[in-house]
Image 1 (cartoon, rainbow, N blue to C red):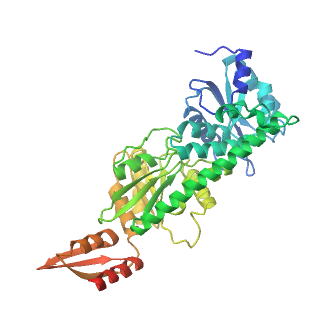
Image 2 (cartoon, rainbow, N blue to C red):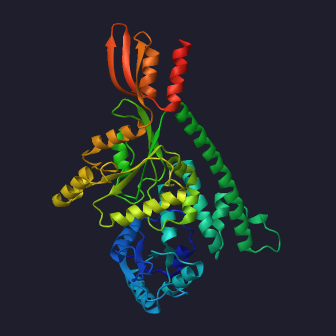
Image 3 (tube, rainbow, N blue to C red):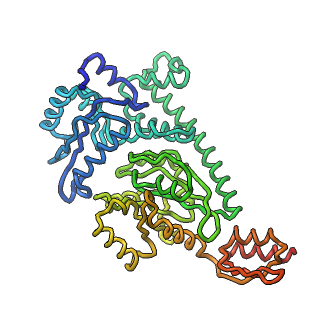
Length: 452
């Protein structure tokens, strides 16, 4: 049923702050697209961009009644898109009773206000939509802090109405302004103060994560970070590898708060696997900055596994988008020595001929040591991926044969925890083990032997 368009109600919608998703809101999605080598849509098919934008809108239960590409000959400073397109969308908005228009691009505050006046409805851009999704998905205190920081930074330059919701959130601070201070000045100051407090809290989170990472390093537990485009299947693969029960749905940004689990690798060694927030094209810089405390788990990981949806028609562009964000974070620095492999997920959704080509190429081609076809849903290829992870994490250090008395169970257990035991034979009262140890573990083992 189409909602009736009520001017008074619409004015309330226009003033309502973007803090929580409004389920069943009738919405339109408009995807500005400028074709050509210098156009903003030149790297991505316009229909694929539109489908992704619709998926983002539906991720917060928006009822998308209208979805269309808006071709651009040139950017219109006042509204981004041309007058003719603005007029056509205005007519559709009124006819369908649309309460929200999502413009899948970056809008300036002036453009956003002008479009709201022209369409007589609420308008948000791509950044605003992503913030809405993040706000709906955040479950932990840390996640909510990061979302709020990004939202405040985004809204700081868009103060055109009273931010009374800030006063409700913080117990009422409207009286803090002096007699001659305007409402916008008060709001800007409130936002600035809140940003300082959130950054201070997130710095405490960052330090806590540093302590936890130091503890894992001391315990010789390497970390594997799963990264990838949103909805690539990271959480499903995480559940498959770890036996966990993290929410895994066919939704964009189904996972927001990071999850970590200890797992046992095929060689008997342990590691910590981390499921991180999904990336997306045109991810706002300030949003990446807000989530840096969480994404440091990726920066500090011993191995990065890029989970890709190879069944998606835009998989190569998605790969490029993810690698761009990783470079921005400094996680793909040249010469870092950090292993980086790709889990080519959802092979079960590929046509048989394309799947055979992919499996042949990754088994015999130049990428065979870097790309691993898997299906997180069915488990196909996961064993090979686990073996690759074990090999890469245990690649450092030369294998050596050591002898340990069978009565010294603590040292034998230590070797299994800190090294890669490749073979073992028990001879009388002695265990002979061929074990690969990295430099630090080897030195620690020598000290244990000398202390005996």
